[in-house]
Image (cartoon, rainbow, N blue to C red; front, top):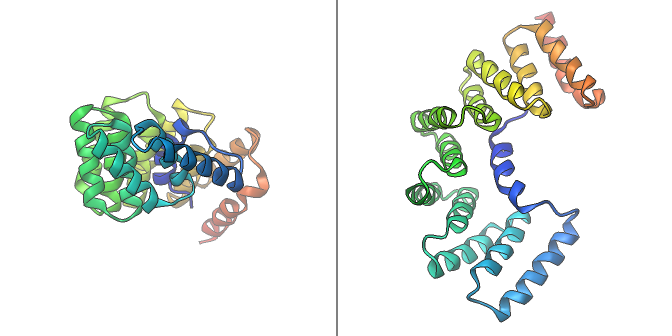
Length: 229
């Protein structure tokens, strides 16, 4: 079922960049950015714009090369550190990603995006204690953030801590009831917890909020299967 690790990271990353309509428009935007950059090779802003298109096209190595240049020209650039941490993670360069996040947090202590990224990185790299400590700190610092609760729930779910994960998805949905992903993740956990009526109510609420019932077939099948066990 759904995992929120990448959703949280993409929420932070692409929420700031804006999404292009299709693959060809991405390619066209990248081509324009590359052409302009050729005339201004030391422009940090232009290089970061090109990096944005590389990331959207999942051209991780190209993005890293440009980010190395950005941070050579401007070592403490916050956007450069954040994006390079993300790209290093995609390249499975976890120690380098961790270092970028830590350097970013030295410059802007308590930065939400950096702390979230570092916690999720630690979980992915199986540094479980650091991941859970980090995400707990994030929730304490940002108690009104649905994303923080959802990220913690994702970590707890992966570690099969279903009861506390269910609570955190509930809290996330309470804070942001427009996000149906939180509701569906809670429904999935409630099935695992054998709280079938509550899970079914979550699915009904999702449909009531406009989510296509046909897209919930997997959930209903899992619900029906577990009821019979």
